[in-house]
Image (cartoon, rainbow, N blue to C red):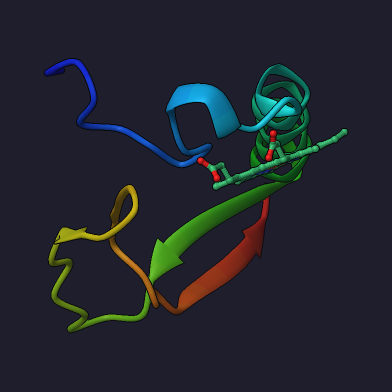
Length: 67
Ligand code: HEM
């Protein structure tokens, strides 16, 4: 990844002070969800990466199935 290409928390002197907390919380939330549910995109969905503040595929509607 190129330096400065991923900026979900901004950068420079006003960069988010909650970045580590935010990434930790997101990782734990993802683990809690993915441990219980299998997520798959609605059939026929084209996944197109969109470069915004960070690289996103959204909005991406998913179907949750219990594991
Ligand atoms: C996923 C979660 C979060 C995202 C995506 C996020 C994103 C951002 C962004 C984009 C900025 C602006 C940076 C700039 O102006 O260059 C910011 C600023 C800030 N964030 Fe977060 N943030 C998150 C979580 C948090 C948390 C958990 C806290 C506090 C516990 C926090 C506290 C702050 C503060 C105080 C600023 C202002 C910093 C300044 O202006 O000096 N953020 N955040």
